[in-house]
Image 1 (spheres, helix red, strand yellow):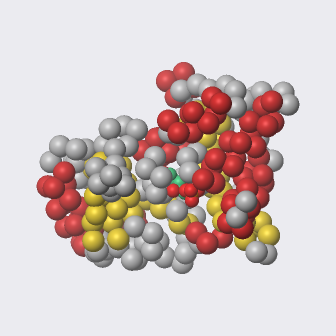
Image 2: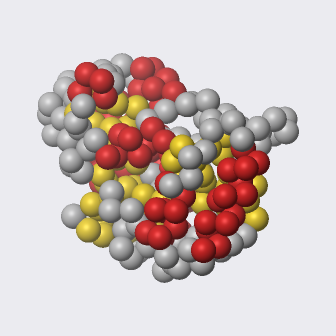
Length: 232
Ligand code: 5RP
């Protein structure tokens, strides 16, 4: 296991301590969340009873392979705890997510949860969001008009930079689990995340954006100095 992978696993192990029998859990997506699902699977194999809602088809496949009981939000509607990774977090526990392309389901699941706990290695900490290109999920219809509006509204919120359509290695556009495209917006810094979020949400072709504001109650960050918990 690489050092970064070991840190991700340490953060995941700390989050596992929050899981109690009978909990309804949101299961995140990405390499860090994969560690959490793997550790959860071990506990389930030992008899822990929980039920999970996956945030992507990838996580669903992993959870199924570990025999973690699954449900959907149509059945459960609210969850006790969601554990997910992040691409960036700032001191106010605001996040950029969506590097793995699952931001829409991740945000729906996080919003349905009483508590969202983020697990990460310390390299994702920033003072100001925006170093990681902001993923914006868009409807395929009118995609270039939507790109134009994203550029205009982002500039009004003080953020500008290249807006790239996410592609697969084959060159074909990346398509999300929901059947949408993603623009990765290389803003560098996002001086006004709330303003930018409101402007992006108001664009009809934008399905969802990767700014997770006011959703995370805690960030568990593993680094060379050990595991730090921000928030509660
Ligand atoms: C997926 C995400 C992931 O949580 C984010 O990209 C972090 O991934 P990783 O744990 O692999 O660094 O938002 O949409």
